[in-house]
Image (cartoon, rainbow, N blue to C red):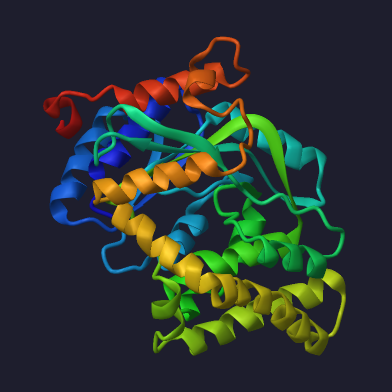
Length: 342
């Protein structure tokens, strides 16, 4: 929504990598951004397979559901216009899901990047590992428990289209964005099956000042639509859990409650601190001193995936180098203004 420069960057990246899949776009932008995107899509006819829809009056969850209903391929992945998925990794994940039917989702390694500018192009000043869920318990109830105790979104992973439709089946009944756009589909994903991380570069997520953020914890739980949305969330998970583990709906309700309480406790015990931390990160996007403090705090954390650093990825010896370089080119090479709007 209203980030046509990011969407154009994404489409140019897929053009450069020769992506052969179908790209379904749901656009909630104003007329200026819509016209800009339409002009670029016209120039890409014959080179990319794009299905474009305008959804000016839909929220994020309802837009996602509309897009899922458009998909005709056996597998699909979801991402925002400011993220990038690696085509070769999508193929590897699809092959994995074909071979392992007890897995509902697969992804490769993720990156978080930050640039020295507020838009889609600039010099990379942050590059680090982005954690995604690896959930491999045998029972659906244990997978849900594991997921909620160490929560990370699953929506960027590749899923079978049947899973996507099940994940978004009830979102039109939910008014709360956190439940509808993220929590319900992500929790349903792990109920439906295991989640695997493959050793390949898969998703790149950019932090920037134009991000659309979910509400902080206090605003979330005090929203007038929180409880009604929670009821839909609870019923949707209980129904899926009862079916998957062959248990009664009463038992499933209890298990959903037991899984959800630790998730809330993260915010209530450590979570007031987590909430303040999320607020601080928002401030850090626009305040230089706060940004420097965030960078220092990140440098003190234990290192994970030492091969995930800008210098390592730029080295030809990196196993991820070939897939990273088209991304690096896409985010560091700014087109002329004429190219960006034509």
